[in-house]
Image (cartoon, rainbow, N blue to C red):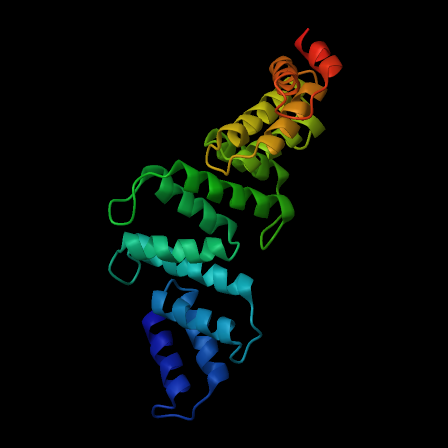
Length: 247
């Protein structure tokens, strides 16, 4: 049935054997796409991208990129192709499709010989993207619980900003119970990422600020390291604060 809808759409688009009608062409391409016809979904993306008959719509484009990827991943109506599946999931993710971002994570986590080896930094990046979309409700229903879980996965891969977010959630009690100790631990972990340049550009000032946040909520190691920063002159020297933080 989906192939029939696709052919009918093509005839209306081209005016083959019947009067050209872009509106009907779009409607039938969409019917085909909604039945997991990959080529139909590609056509729908083009309509939304160019604003043919319909208004330009990035969210709709990402939705249909996801459908195309799914068809290639599963071999629905066409030859299974993991590489193309990845490429279309990534297109969806890069247009802020949360589930597309989660799919991309899977590829980076397990690695695929045809594209790349495992890449924890990239996996962390796309976990963070998916979490942000759930947190904000961008193109998807807002879900703080899911956002937290995805930020934590990003943090587990040493994604600095994801780690800060987990600290925020624990500190404020968003979607979980407040836990000052865990908040401090995640702020310290984020600080370490910035200090060492783990998956992010080295930034001593940002590292210090995060250690200081951890110290301000009574994280022992954060307090100790802030003292070292002051004592060693990594930041503006303050002997009194250094002594207090080291004691």
